[in-house]
Amino acid sequence: MEKKVIYTQGAPEAIGPYSQGIQASGLVFLSGQIALRPGSTELVNGSVTEETEQVMQNLQAVLSAAGLNFSDVIKTTIFLGDMDAFAAVNEVYGKYFKDSFPARETVAVKGLPRGARVEISMIAAS
Image (cartoon, rainbow, N blue to C red; front, side):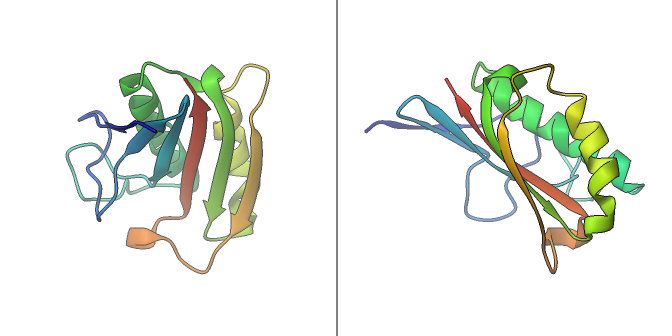
């Protein structure tokens, strides 16, 4: 199996020992993104809606670096610091998919890196 690292300056640098994405066996695995602005270590300061917009933009940049877009996404996982944010996050998330929605789960977690309220990871088919 050949493995290729996906990297773009259009998404935040990894804040640990991981890659923004990995392409292997026709799949692209995107690491979870929080609402960091590319080139910064600071979290977007705003509502959960604004955080989710930044998360989706970060994911879009990694997909683009792999030559893909949201129509290629087959699976997502959404992590929420508070399930009360589900409707707001879902509204933003839904704007990025037109049809043929990916499989997904949404889970509430005790905490996320940097105090983020939302993190999303994806798997796409190349």
